[in-house]
Image (tube, rainbow, N blue to C red; front, side, top):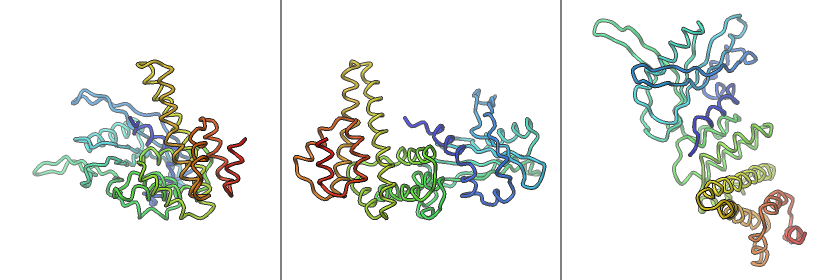
Amino acid sequence: MIDHDRLFKELLSTFFVEFLQLFFPQVINYIDTQSIILLDKEVFTDVTEGEKHESDLIFQVKFRGKPSYFLVHVEAQSSSKKDFERRMFVYFARLHEKFALPVYPIVLFSYDTPLKEAKNKYKVTFPDLNVLQFNYQVVQLNRLNWRDFLNQPNPIASALMAKMRIDPQDRPKVKAQCLRLLTTLKLDPARMQLISGFVDTYLKLNASEEIQFEQEISTFTPPEQESSMEIITSWMEKGIERGIEQGIERGIEQGIERGIEQGIEQGSIREKELITRQIKRKLGEINPELESQIKALDIDRLEALGEALLDFNSVEDLIAFLQQ
């Protein structure tokens, strides 16, 4: 199961300024970006439903050139909820009451369906009186076209393209373009891993899509290809780790030793096939004997081959590696 809330909260808390720059540039114009503080989450009890709800992200920020502050409340929603607009108003009212500060409310909808436009206001009206109209900003990813963000030099764009409106046949292309955009950004390793892991989580490809994905990568410039290969290698390592973890979980029921073996096997088969295809794309066709040697590699040697491949210039380099 994908922990959508954790992934989006980590992404938005790490790239909050970039999120505002991409979707709400008008807000960037009047905030002091050096003053941003992420506050502890707030827990609200919904008496009518008998439930407790946690606000996602609350940032305290300062008006640029002024001594006053306000809050930015960002709620990430991975599913469509009935009466969600009323809950947003309750969050606003409680936050405004507790902190006595203006609140700028934003919702990021990341669900795949429904496609209809989400509500962005909550009203309380009578035939003779409009008591309340509460408005909030909405970013609804399934109504955004990924092509509109291709040339945005923004890490949030490279991540969220993976959750925008994508035709099924374009999935490999979108993943490749997310990767290409990511390689153009000068991010530290931790932030790079966060974005690339987000993309890989939401754009899992089948075997035929993987082939198309590799073809897309082959059209990149050499520096982009090299950076992409490094990221793909990290995905493969994570895939092996996930395979081992899943094997251990099954091993609790089936026997630990056999479970680990199955996890390692399942986690590495896909990576061996992917590395073999990458070698063929870079060096041309290889003979069946070399291909068999690659498939016989253990996990440590497989990871080492994935890294060494970046420096291969000929089949002789591959042979020399396998003979070590």
